[in-house]
Amino acid sequence: MKKAWGESLVSNAGVGLVTFLMTILIIVPLAIAAFLLAAQTQSIAVLIAGVGTVLVLMVLAGLIGSALNSIALCALYLYATEGKVPQAFANTGLQHAFATKKK
Image (cartoon, one colour):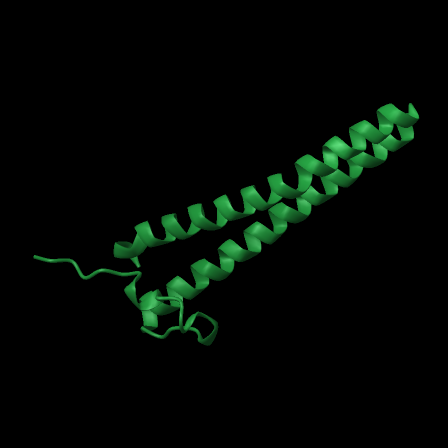
């Protein structure tokens, strides 16, 4: 596993990037809609509800991203230590995640 730290770094960055992009695509329009609705109705309650919803979605996105990262790292660890590819990762090219070191 010591030789494969780069793969876990790439996996972590990949999952983080996808989670970030999905969060932005969901939260930014929702935040804009909440702000515009609050401005239109001139209601602080609508603004607070919108901010609360955005915060809850941000926490959920963080939890989902963390879970996905843990799953990917566990699959890499299992393959690195036992040479077994988990069934869910069978066709993902995990076998090519590790390169043999040339001497």
